[in-house]
Image 1 (tube, one colour):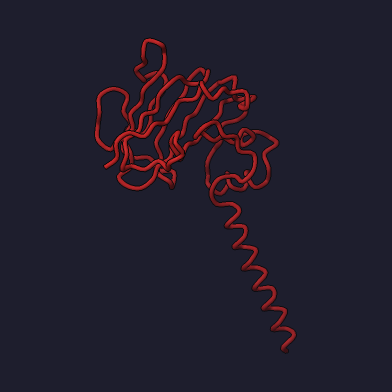
Image 2 (image 1 turned 120 degrees about the vertical axis):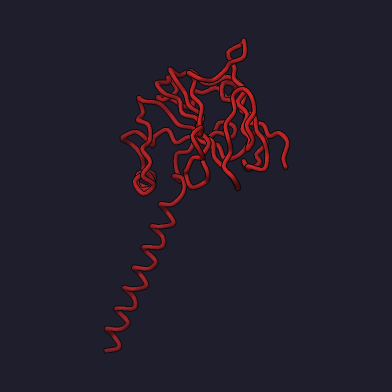
Length: 189
């Protein structure tokens, strides 16, 4: 009888350890294949056939639908250009040029992946541009004139820049850092 209890206890511990490690390994962002350009991070293989099993499991668990390799590419930022975490207590300016793409979107998400209100993002078709073609987008909790995106009510947030029908989809490593928009922290309250 004690041998059976030892075997059952071993199976129970193994199952608990297995479930816990799978939960840990498939929560968050993919651990492999990230490409960083300043504060922006992307996983180029995420929408392709050669995606690693961990990234595939994370994508399935989150329910996210990544852009296919030929469709475009998504960049995420959780920090500003100085390396500080993005937090709603500060205002930010996303400025500069955008990489070549037929269209792009910039969206503000809370850490759980939710958006706030009716205006969570801007598109390349609706944004106001400077004479040189660059953009200045203000991120703030209070409404401001021009290109403005509201921030979540509290805590940290994430920016998602999606480039649709972009030549960089095939080789994101070829993107020049100067063509990515800057994220500059303004005043904090």
